[in-house]
Image (cartoon, rainbow, N blue to C red; front, side, top):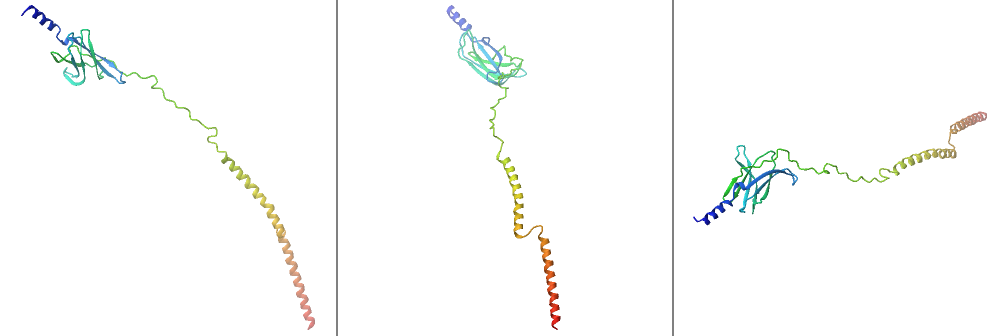
Length: 214
C-alpha cells in the first residue's frame, strides 16, 4: 500500500458516520395545545451522510417497544443538524432512539433522552376562564302592562250599578200607570165590599116587592 493510499484510507475512516455523532434530548412541548414530548436529535457527522431516526417506547428490560415517531436528517454537518420528533408525553420517561446512516443500521444511541420529571401542562389562555356575558335584553317600557284589561273591569262594574238603580223608577212609573202599587190591594178590597153590600140591598128589596104583590 502506498503512502497516498494509506492517507486516503485514514481520511475516509476519519470521516465515516459514527453513532457518537448523534445526541438526543427530550423536552415538554405544548405548542399544539396538548402535552407532548419533543425528542430533538442532533447529527454532527462531518461526512454529511443522511440519517433516518426512529423513536420507540423503552420496555422495562430496556428492549425496544412500539415505534412512536420517526425523523430524517438529510444533510448533517460538523456544526450539527437537528430534527425534532413529537411523541406522546410521559413524565420522567426514557426513550429508545435508533439511527440508520451509512454503515449504521438501526443502531441505538448510547445516551438516551429522558423527558423531564415534571408535569407538562399546556398554558391556559387568561380569558378562557372568563364567562362570556351577552348583551342585556332590551325591555320595552310598556312590556308586561295591559292597560285595556284593568280598565275593562271597572267599566263593567260601574255600568252595571246604574242600570239596576235606573230600573226602579221606571218600574214605579209603570205601576202608577196601571193602578198598581202598594195601595192597590186595599182599594180593591174596599170596592169588593161595597159591591157585596149593594147586592144584598137589592136582594132584600126584591123580596119585599114580591111579597107585597101576593
